[in-house]
Length: 179
Image (cartoon, rainbow, N blue to C red; front, side, top):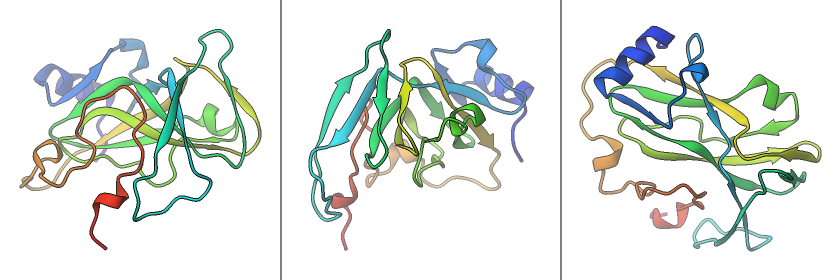
């Protein structure tokens, strides 16, 4: 089941859900709104290789001028908010207003793991040029309850590739997998 606003607030008081910074006006009926952080990144190479470490160039957007995203380029963004989820499964979805601008905020990685503690990296693509700004509402976190006990939380997993706390986008770590 999806947590309601009252349940999300109660879990925050228990410490099983953490959102920093927290703004009560961002709490929706059954979600919490998150915002675009000030950093974006693009891959350095035109052709990415799943078996290789693909490097990125990170840059900071101007708060006044924003940044114009272009179609055909994969941008890595980041949420302004740092989050922790210790007893629920978080899902990140784009806000409908963002979708109506032709912005997709994730290619496939909308689900988090129990124990994920970090800023969310966004896989941003656009259908037409669009100017974005740091601090703009970009998505909403939805929390699902669990059935059963968790054996290994994400932040304690030896194989977890995205545990290093950062407020900057993180490139794909697929190359760390064996295949």
